[in-house]
Length: 209
Image (cartoon, rainbow, N blue to C red; front, side, top):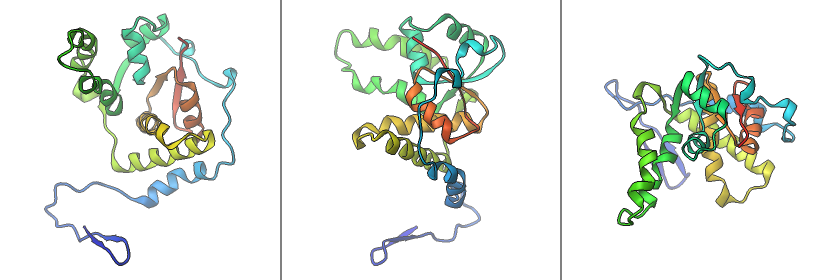
């Protein structure tokens, strides 16, 4: 790939047949996936009766993706009984984005502080139990789609630019759940309600803390 200063365009060289780093990416596909969302006139928060809550889910066997808040609420002892049941009996998958958010405190907290090791221990226990075959990655098209949808939600919510990075992560988590047919468990009604309106494939079940 080379850059043309005159036109501001990138020109991609023809890949050789031996390339091992090729990543499938089509912006036409991205634009088709987000067309309906981009043309949406207005997003409105759903009423409770229009949402799915975890109490309506079966206790056993449902493939789920946990949002970061669901894991943290469990560690803090704030998870409702139904959420604990789903975690114990469900088919748990892990978003690479959530794993990244859970890892951040290991860089933020001062390793020389006497309380750091104790504070990080519960997170370390969770991360150590992650099974690699249950981790969902985000590919290039998924990242592009998520950024567009996050931009749409941010525009409707009139969020300042500095508040939008977390929304991009939420959109990525939603895109992962939608692609692989997983039910996303979260307490974040504001973001995931609107993201769900932009992707009919997304199944979100909310819980109350």
